Length: 311
Image (tube, rainbow, N blue to C red; front, side):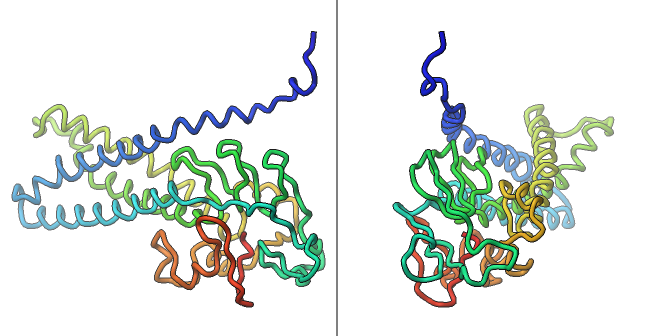
C-alpha cells in the first residue's frame, strides 16, 4: 500500500544537511596538512640548515625557502578563514523585485538599470520564488541544501571551507586556491631533492624513520594538492573572466550573449575590487566596501555610481 503523496514527495536533498557535521573535521584536516608540511619543511629539513648545519649557500637557500613558506602560509590561512567565517550573502527578508516596486527603474538588490538591457534580453530577469525559503529570490541566487538558505550569486557549497561560496566570499575563495597552489608548489619543489635521494642514494640518509616518513608524506600530499588545486584555479579564472559561476556555466552555454558579461576587466573588478593594492589580499578597500553588500544583512549606498551587477 502506497503512502500519501505528501509523504512520498520527500526531498532527498534534505539529507545534505548532514554534511554540516564534517565542519570541524574538514578544518582539522586542512590544519593537519599544513602542520605536516610545516614539520617536514621547517623543522626537519630547512630549519637545521638555517641553525648552522650547512654551508653559506645552503643557509641562504634555507632562509629564502623558510621566509617564502611563512609568508605564503600567512596569506593562505588568512584567505582560508576568511572564506570559512564570511557570510556568502543572504537575501533580505521580504525582498521584492523591481517589477513589484511602484516607482523607479532600478532593481534595489542588483542596482541594475532595467532600461539599459540588451535588445535581445528581457527587460528584467524573471522573478523567481524559493519554495524552501518561502520567499522571492533575486537573479543569480540559488538555494543551498546544505546551508538551508538562499545564497546570493552562489557558486557552490565547498566542504573544505565548510561554507557556501557566494557573492561576498568568492574573492577569498579564489585567493585561498591561489595561495594554496603557491604554497604546495613551494613545499613540493623544496622537498623534491630529499624525495629523489630517498630512492636513489645508496648511502644511509640522515634522520629518524619518523622524520623520513613525514617528509615523504608531506611531499606526496603537497604534490597531489598542487596538481588538483591548479585545475580548480584555472577553472575559476575562466569563470571570473566571463562573469559566471559554476552553477551558471551550463546556462551560459545556451545563450548567445551572457547578460552579466561586462568585459574581462570589469568582470574581474566586480570580484576583486577596483583598488589594485587589495587584489591579492582577502579584504576590500574602504571604497570597494561601499560598493558591495555588508557582511551581515544587505546595505546599499544611495550613490548614483553604485554598481553591483554581480549580486
